[in-house]
Length: 175
Image (tube, rainbow, N blue to C red; front, side, top):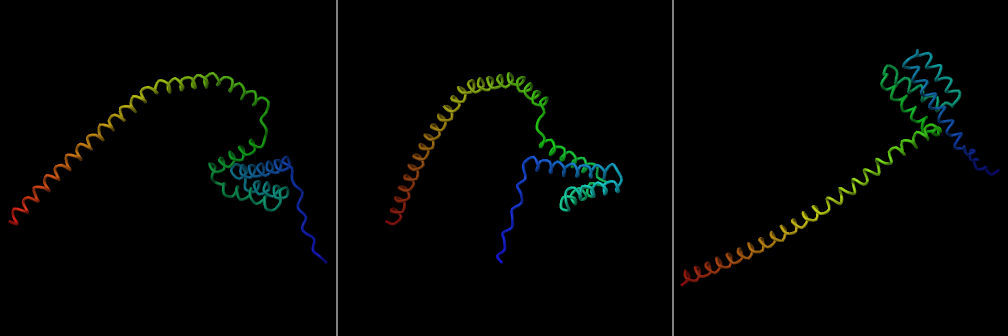
Protein backbone atom coordinates (compact mmCIF):
# COMPACT_ATOMS: atom_id res chain seq x y z
CA UNK A 1 0.00 0.00 0.00
CA UNK A 2 1.37 3.45 -0.96
CA UNK A 3 1.47 5.97 1.89
CA UNK A 4 -0.76 9.00 1.35
CA UNK A 5 0.83 12.43 1.66
CA UNK A 6 -0.14 14.29 4.81
CA UNK A 7 -3.01 16.68 4.26
CA UNK A 8 -2.28 20.34 4.81
CA UNK A 9 -4.26 21.87 7.68
CA UNK A 10 -7.06 24.21 6.75
CA UNK A 11 -5.86 27.78 6.20
CA UNK A 12 -6.96 30.10 8.99
CA UNK A 13 -8.50 33.37 8.04
CA UNK A 14 -7.07 36.65 9.29
CA UNK A 15 -9.99 37.11 11.67
CA UNK A 16 -9.45 33.66 13.20
CA UNK A 17 -5.75 34.33 13.64
CA UNK A 18 -6.47 37.73 15.20
CA UNK A 19 -9.02 36.21 17.60
CA UNK A 20 -6.54 33.55 18.61
CA UNK A 21 -3.80 36.12 19.22
CA UNK A 22 -6.16 38.29 21.27
CA UNK A 23 -7.07 35.26 23.36
CA UNK A 24 -3.41 34.47 23.96
CA UNK A 25 -2.62 38.02 24.97
CA UNK A 26 -5.62 38.21 27.28
CA UNK A 27 -4.62 34.96 28.93
CA UNK A 28 -1.05 36.15 29.40
CA UNK A 29 -2.14 39.54 30.73
CA UNK A 30 -4.58 37.94 33.16
CA UNK A 31 -1.90 35.60 34.45
CA UNK A 32 0.56 38.43 34.94
CA UNK A 33 -2.02 40.58 36.72
CA UNK A 34 -2.99 37.73 39.00
CA UNK A 35 0.62 36.89 39.79
CA UNK A 36 1.37 40.46 40.79
CA UNK A 37 -1.91 41.48 42.43
CA UNK A 38 -3.62 38.21 43.31
CA UNK A 39 -2.66 34.99 45.00
CA UNK A 40 -0.50 32.34 43.42
CA UNK A 41 -3.39 29.88 43.29
CA UNK A 42 -5.54 32.32 41.30
CA UNK A 43 -2.72 32.70 38.78
CA UNK A 44 -2.38 28.93 38.50
CA UNK A 45 -6.15 28.56 37.96
CA UNK A 46 -6.06 31.21 35.25
CA UNK A 47 -3.09 29.55 33.60
CA UNK A 48 -4.93 26.21 33.78
CA UNK A 49 -8.03 27.58 32.07
CA UNK A 50 -5.85 29.16 29.41
CA UNK A 51 -4.19 25.80 28.87
CA UNK A 52 -7.54 24.16 28.18
CA UNK A 53 -8.51 26.88 25.73
CA UNK A 54 -5.27 27.33 23.84
CA UNK A 55 -3.50 24.01 24.00
CA UNK A 56 -0.42 22.78 25.78
CA UNK A 57 2.18 24.88 23.92
CA UNK A 58 0.44 28.19 24.45
CA UNK A 59 -0.77 27.53 27.98
CA UNK A 60 2.75 27.33 29.37
CA UNK A 61 3.58 30.88 28.23
CA UNK A 62 1.25 32.76 30.63
CA UNK A 63 2.41 30.61 33.54
CA UNK A 64 6.05 31.25 32.69
CA UNK A 65 5.39 34.97 32.38
CA UNK A 66 3.57 34.98 35.71
CA UNK A 67 6.40 33.10 37.44
CA UNK A 68 9.04 35.43 36.08
CA UNK A 69 7.02 38.56 36.85
CA UNK A 70 6.00 37.52 40.36
CA UNK A 71 7.64 39.86 42.84
CA UNK A 72 8.62 42.30 40.10
CA UNK A 73 5.82 44.80 39.56
CA UNK A 74 7.84 46.83 37.06
CA UNK A 75 8.38 43.79 34.83
CA UNK A 76 4.72 42.87 35.14
CA UNK A 77 3.71 46.41 34.24
CA UNK A 78 5.96 46.40 31.19
CA UNK A 79 4.58 43.04 30.07
CA UNK A 80 1.01 44.26 30.53
CA UNK A 81 1.80 47.45 28.63
CA UNK A 82 3.27 45.45 25.75
CA UNK A 83 0.24 43.13 25.72
CA UNK A 84 -2.03 46.18 25.60
CA UNK A 85 -0.11 47.58 22.66
CA UNK A 86 -0.41 44.26 20.85
CA UNK A 87 -4.15 44.07 21.44
CA UNK A 88 -4.66 47.68 20.39
CA UNK A 89 -2.73 47.09 17.18
CA UNK A 90 -5.04 44.21 16.30
CA UNK A 91 -8.19 46.26 16.78
CA UNK A 92 -9.29 48.69 14.06
CA UNK A 93 -9.47 52.39 14.89
CA UNK A 94 -12.88 53.57 16.03
CA UNK A 95 -14.82 56.30 14.25
CA UNK A 96 -14.05 58.72 17.10
CA UNK A 97 -10.33 57.97 16.82
CA UNK A 98 -10.44 58.47 13.06
CA UNK A 99 -12.25 61.79 13.48
CA UNK A 100 -9.75 62.93 16.11
CA UNK A 101 -6.86 62.03 13.81
CA UNK A 102 -8.49 64.02 10.99
CA UNK A 103 -8.95 67.06 13.27
CA UNK A 104 -5.33 66.89 14.36
CA UNK A 105 -4.20 66.57 10.76
CA UNK A 106 -6.37 69.53 9.69
CA UNK A 107 -5.12 71.63 12.63
CA UNK A 108 -1.48 70.76 11.98
CA UNK A 109 -1.59 71.35 8.22
CA UNK A 110 -1.22 75.17 8.43
CA UNK A 111 1.76 74.71 10.75
CA UNK A 112 3.33 72.22 8.35
CA UNK A 113 2.77 74.63 5.45
CA UNK A 114 4.28 77.49 7.47
CA UNK A 115 7.32 75.43 8.40
CA UNK A 116 7.77 74.36 4.79
CA UNK A 117 7.64 77.99 3.61
CA UNK A 118 10.08 79.04 6.34
CA UNK A 119 12.48 76.25 5.37
CA UNK A 120 12.32 77.31 1.71
CA UNK A 121 12.97 80.95 2.66
CA UNK A 122 15.92 79.94 4.83
CA UNK A 123 17.35 77.85 2.00
CA UNK A 124 16.97 80.75 -0.41
CA UNK A 125 18.55 83.20 2.07
CA UNK A 126 21.49 80.86 2.67
CA UNK A 127 22.09 80.22 -1.02
CA UNK A 128 24.00 83.46 -1.71
CA UNK A 129 26.22 83.31 1.42
CA UNK A 130 27.01 79.70 0.60
CA UNK A 131 28.01 80.65 -2.94
CA UNK A 132 30.21 83.47 -1.60
CA UNK A 133 31.84 81.12 0.87
CA UNK A 134 32.47 78.62 -1.92
CA UNK A 135 34.05 81.34 -4.05
CA UNK A 136 36.29 82.36 -1.14
CA UNK A 137 37.36 78.75 -0.61
CA UNK A 138 38.11 78.43 -4.32
CA UNK A 139 40.12 81.67 -4.28
CA UNK A 140 42.05 80.61 -1.19
CA UNK A 141 42.81 77.23 -2.79
CA UNK A 142 44.04 78.94 -5.96
CA UNK A 143 46.26 81.28 -3.94
CA UNK A 144 47.62 78.39 -1.91
CA UNK A 145 48.37 76.43 -5.07
CA UNK A 146 50.27 79.37 -6.54
CA UNK A 147 52.21 79.84 -3.29
CA UNK A 148 53.17 76.16 -3.16
CA UNK A 149 54.23 76.30 -6.82
CA UNK A 150 56.39 79.38 -6.20
CA UNK A 151 57.93 77.79 -3.09
CA UNK A 152 58.65 74.60 -5.03
CA UNK A 153 60.33 76.55 -7.84
CA UNK A 154 62.43 78.53 -5.34
CA UNK A 155 63.41 75.33 -3.55
CA UNK A 156 64.34 73.69 -6.85
CA UNK A 157 66.46 76.70 -7.80
CA UNK A 158 68.17 76.62 -4.36
CA UNK A 159 68.89 72.89 -4.68
CA UNK A 160 70.27 73.42 -8.21
CA UNK A 161 72.52 76.25 -6.99
CA UNK A 162 73.77 74.18 -4.05
CA UNK A 163 74.42 71.23 -6.37
CA UNK A 164 76.45 73.50 -8.69
CA UNK A 165 78.44 74.85 -5.72
CA UNK A 166 79.08 71.33 -4.49
CA UNK A 167 80.24 70.30 -7.98
CA UNK A 168 82.61 73.27 -8.19
CA UNK A 169 83.99 72.55 -4.71
CA UNK A 170 84.62 68.89 -5.56
CA UNK A 171 86.34 69.82 -8.85
CA UNK A 172 88.64 72.37 -7.18
CA UNK A 173 89.51 69.90 -4.46
CA UNK A 174 90.41 67.31 -7.09
CA UNK A 175 92.91 69.64 -8.86
